[in-house]
Image (cartoon, rainbow, N blue to C red; front, side, top):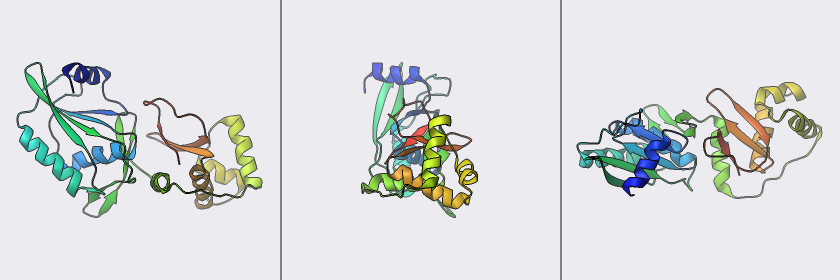
Length: 223
C-alpha cells in the first residue's frame, strides 16, 4: 500500500469497511473486528491511527503482528484470513490489516462461555442475531431454495410493495402466527433471494430484493 492510498483511507474515516485502532488491542477484542469484517464485505483495520484520524503510529510492529496472529487463529472460529502491511507515514509507521470477505461464513469469536458472531454495521461491529447467522450460513451453501407461495406470502408482498419494509414482529401480527414461525418464513424468503435482511444498531428488517446499496448503507445479506 502506498502512502497516498493510506492517506485516502484515513481521510475517509471509520465506516463500513474501515476501523481505526490507536494501538493494537488484546487478541479477543481484535477478533471481534476481524470476525465482523470477514462476515460482511471485508475491510481494513488501521493500527496506529486515532479516532480523530490523527496518526499515532506503532512502536513495536513485531508485538502487534503476534497479537494479530493470536486473534485470527486462536480467537476466531473458523480462523479469519488476513494480510498485513507496515506503511511509513509522516515519520511514523501504521500497520494495516486487510480482511477479505470470507467464503467460510459465519465466523465466530471464541469466548469463555461459547462463541459469538459479529457483523459490520456502518462504523461498528455488532453481534449478529440467530437469523443473521442463519442467513450467513445459507449464503455459503449455494443451493436452490424452494418455498410455498400462499396467502401469508401474498399478504407480505402486498405490504412490502406499499410500506417497503417489515420486521418479524410486524409480520407475525399481520398474519397471526408466532414470531418464531414468522422468522422462519422470512429467512426462507431471504435464502430464496426474494427478500433482503437488513440490520441496523437498533433493529432488523426485511425488504424486497433489490440491487446492493452503497458500502455505508446498513449491512445487507443476500443468498
